[in-house]
Image 1: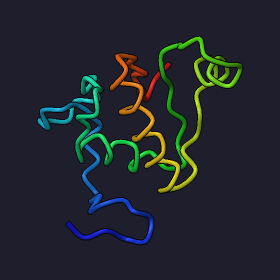
Image 2 (image 1 turned 60 degrees about the vertical axis):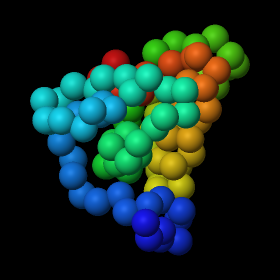
Image 3 (image 1 turned 120 degrees about the vertical axis):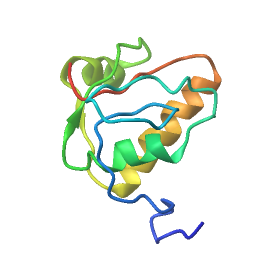
Image 4 (image 1 turned 60 degrees about the horizontal axis):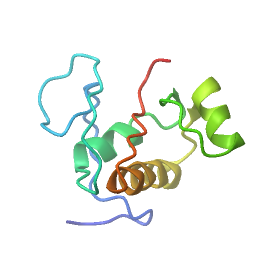
Length: 105
């Protein structure tokens, strides 16, 4: 696969609104991909397609920042930020912690 200068591989423009490990139709739902380091390009595209938009995640008691994100969501600021969130979700998933990012609170 080709990489651009952000390190995000071939992200494409498919914004189906669906984020799940099976690929499959866009119905506005976001199903967990299960974490555990098994992320795929569909989930990376999900983050990339939301650059400039606010997303939310389930509460995870870690630090004040995590509490703030759970309460108010966060805005994905760039491709690098999208890649960071994708990697973070997979890293936590490898430890059995599912962050479950989504479009709606």
